[in-house]
Image (tube, rainbow, N blue to C red; front, side, top):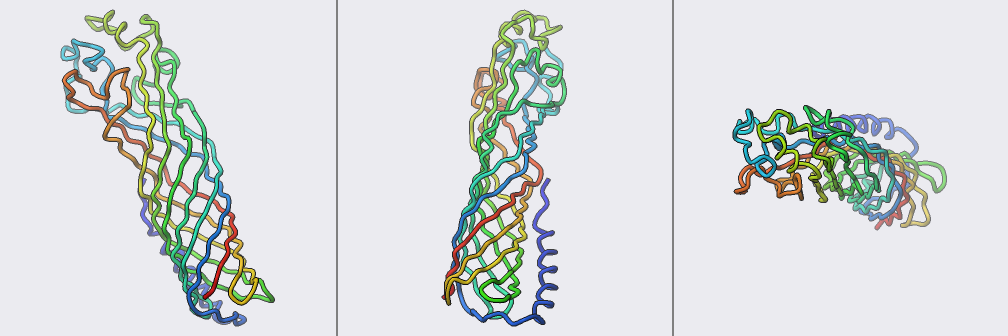
Length: 313
């Protein structure tokens, strides 16, 4: 799912062509030198398709659940987690956007800028696990009565380098376009709950085992849960279009719209689940074979409208 910032350089090439055309246009007012800007806005984030994986084994291979796990075929082989996967879909979200930038105006058409911005996408959603691999899918709604995940919010603090072309204009208004590449430290406020049926007769996992009744009793009513913050650093690029409105010789307002696209998210939680089938996140009583999980998404993006106050030195 990783892509890298290669596509962003294509946008810089496009901007270079725009610079060529801009050079022949009406001369803009020269404002050579550094400037500072700071602003706020709102953004929309698309739905998230969250994909989970784990190096867990089948429940019948869990020593806490089945003391006779070593007698079960496949419970001691090295291919842990080969069938453990699930997917959950979340709707789109909105939130606040705030940023600040230090830039340099080259007294013509070009500006170069270092920008920091923060966004907080408020999902506040719980969603059922829609699909799972292996035998897990067949157990959803029967043996596994609750299987849901939650995203409270997705936040990121991002640093971008932006290149702009100013087109000039009549009076106080001046349009511009820009592109940028950068890095975003992204966090997902995540939680999950998997709960098995409390009726031992509904536990199909135990079918055919020599100690079937014992495993049914031990597994019935168990819970796997987690509440944590997942994090990753994502490369990205953005396209910006705006209008600058001059309030005076040094102060102006920027009205902007932007589209920012980030790589897919990937986070490995080495500490494992808060509770795994109502016991610590491990498969053996002696603490061996700890269980971890990892979550990932496809590329993510945000669409922003904002207003900033700019001061030219």
